[in-house]
Length: 131
Image (cartoon, rainbow, N blue to C red):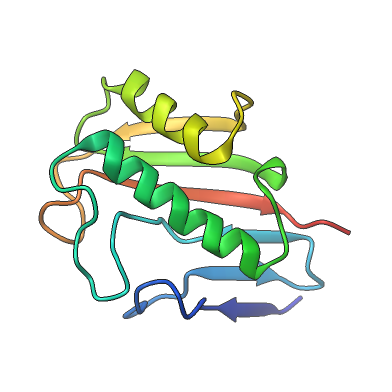
């Protein structure tokens, strides 16, 4: 087994990691945690958890496009957040971006901080690639 590393150019640069790893022969893709960062590393959404969640989900959407997958192909989601009890805010933002109330298996983990000060949420997913 080998792997293919993908870094979509419309996502922020990935210093020290890859945004996507596809386990060859290409049935599963693992997405690095996506956050509310623009390509220039500015934080999108300020201190608004809902807006940061939408931005992180839009970045996941970019990564999905890079592997020709859709939201329906997401089989697992892990959320790291400074505000784990605000799941209603996160869920509403996620549903708005994915356009559905259908959710994969998910875990929400409360953290005391993320890699860039000011970030409130990081979302990673595992994707079953379309045949």
